[in-house]
Amino acid sequence: MSAALTISHCTVASEWDAAIWANARGNIFAAWMWGAYKSRIGWTVTRLIIRDANGDPVALIQYQVRVRGFLRSVLVQGGPLLTPKGEKHAEAAMGAFVEHLALGRFDLLVISFEHAQSDPVLIALLGHHFVPVQSHKYYTLELDLARGTEPILQGMDQRWRKALRKAERNAELTTRFLTDPSERLAAFDAFWTMYGALQARKGFRDTLDGTAFRDLVANDPHHRILEVRENGTCILVRIAHVSAERFTDFYTASNDRARACGAPTLAVWRFIEQAHAEGVRFFDLGGIDPGKNRGTFEFKHGLSKTLVSSGPRWIYCRTPRLRDAVGAFLAFR
Image (cartoon, rainbow, N blue to C red; front, side, top):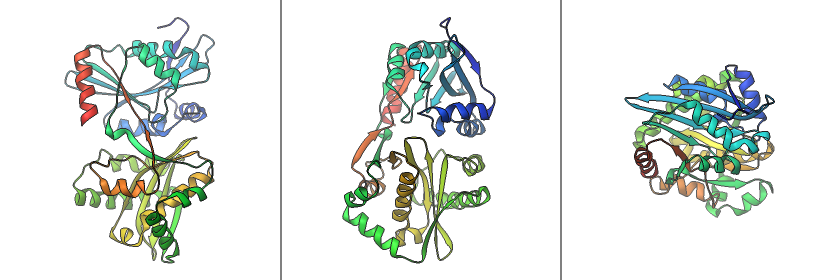
């Protein structure tokens, strides 16, 4: 480790979140709440603050560890985050982090920035022999909200605009962003029931553990929960997470009535309006996979044609063959 840098563990949630959300690239994946969720589902979570000789933070890193057999996997999501002072210490900070982990020959370190990368930290990773791995799963569509919502309304496909107008004219539909934790818990439970039915109908599996996630998301101020009702009955719940720059469509679930009356279209538009009202620059439609889920892709593509990547993932391993094998797996799975 560089003699000028020191590493300390952060064990106080309020201290950690204050540092994360004061950072221009702060995001939910780097926040305490996400680490708490991952610890509930079997990961060992550690939060590090790397400081310079003056004691000022230069990097914030929340990492997760899981051991399976002889392989120890270390995962960083939403970071590492450099502070403004940290940009000139990026290579030393990443070197200190790798040294701190004391990785063995069969240990693997994966970094997933989730749009939180910066040029200094990427250059630092290259300098420490990290390898980038891209995949079709790391792409999404986004909208630039800088000019307001009217250009978006005019630029969307005609079928999208027609569906939105029809849904907005439907007096039986109501939308509401929930702020009360008890209401948010109830909405999440409704979401989880509908999401389970969706998985059964479409035959897919998801890694989200609703039991472990429900109270965390219900009480987290950086998540938005939107409920759509028809004649007073909940037919759709949509969840987003928000950072300084991005309002990201995260999870949604609905029933047959929602699809019949255009509730998904209305819900996404309410998200866009909310993102603009909060002063967020980009609305992220939450990922696309046109090869495997064409219907969802066409729905999102009717709203945005701007393709961006949240990747690549960055891999470090002392054993090149293992690193390359894992890289190939991540790229093609």
